[in-house]
Image 1 (cartoon, each protein chain N blue to C red):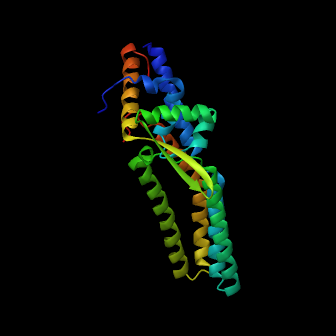
Image 2: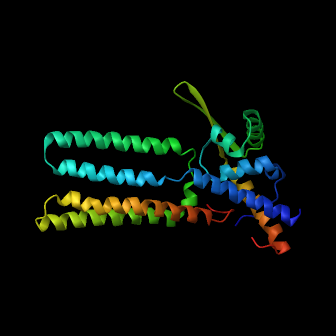
Image 3: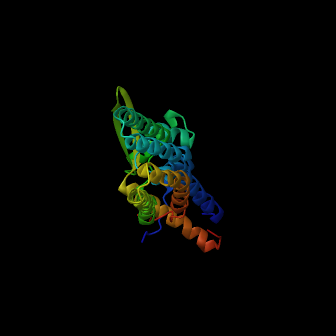
Length: 154
Length: 100
C-alpha cells in the first residue's frame, strides 16, 4: 500500500475522532447558567423567607433541569470514557474539589467572621470559577482526548 | 500490544469513516452516524449490515416513546480489528519515513 494513502487514512481516523469529541463538548453557556442558578438558589435559601425559599427552590429545579436537558439534547453522541482516561477524570475531580473547597471554606470563614449572607458571598467565586474554569476544563479534556494514541487506547 | 494487521473490510473509505466514528463512541445513534458520515439511510444501513455480518458492529434497536431508535457500537472484535488496522497503517507510514 502507498504510504501516502496510509497517512491519508490515518488523517481520516483522527478527523473522525475529533468530530466525535467536538460533538460531545459542553457549551460555555452551560457553566455560566449553572453559576447563576447556584447564586440565586443560595441567596433564596439564605434569605430565610419561606416564600422566597420556595420560589428559589422551584426556579432552581426548573432551571437546572432545563439547562441539563438542553445540553443533553445538543449532545448527539457519547464519547468513550477510555478516551478521557485517568488524567481526564482526575482533572474533573480536581476541578470539583477545588470549587467545593473554596465555597465551603469561604462560607465557613465568612460566617465565623459574622459577615451577613456568608453562603451567598461564598458561592459567588464558585460560580465565577465554574463560568471561567468550566470551558477551560472542557478545552483541556478535548486536547487530552485528541492526544490519545489512535490504536490501543484501552 | 496490538499486532498490525491490514483489514480490507475496514479500509474501504465509507467504512473507515464509520468505524473511526464508532471507535471514539459508546453507542452511536443511527441519525448521528448518517449525518456525521454524510450518508443516506440506505447507504448507512448497507454499511452497518456489512460490518455487523463481519462481527465488527453490534446493532441495537430500542423504542423512545413510539419511535424506533437504532444504535450501533463497535464490538470487541471490531475494536481489535480497527486497532490492528490502524497499527498496520502506522507501520506503513513509519517504514516510509513519513512524519506521523
